[in-house]
Image 1: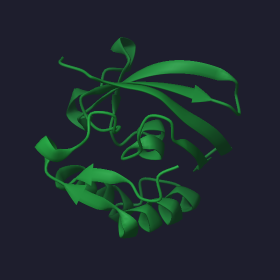
Image 2: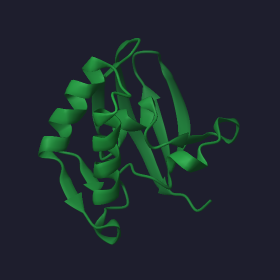
Image 3: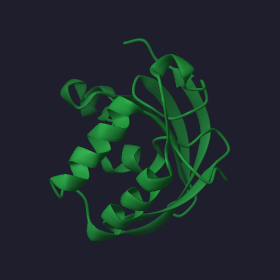
Length: 126
């Protein structure tokens, strides 16, 4: 598993803002703050294609709840859950943003810790 996440400066700042506004549980807050301290910030054009970020279609396997699901991560203003478009600041996106295909993350969701694996990351052009 990656020992640090890779994010664009815009995503980094958005996560920092989410933490500052207390939009996540204390477990998530602690974990995100720790990840941001070690995060590698890159320009959008330098972000590897297999990294979870905004405008990507991501297939995840939840080992805890035993299901696979595909998510489209978009800017918060473009969130449309009926069309499977999830904000990059949603709980599931915050758990996997900055990680890459093959990574397995144990994440402290509000309803308990879950083990999430990133199976596929594709560019998404909405």
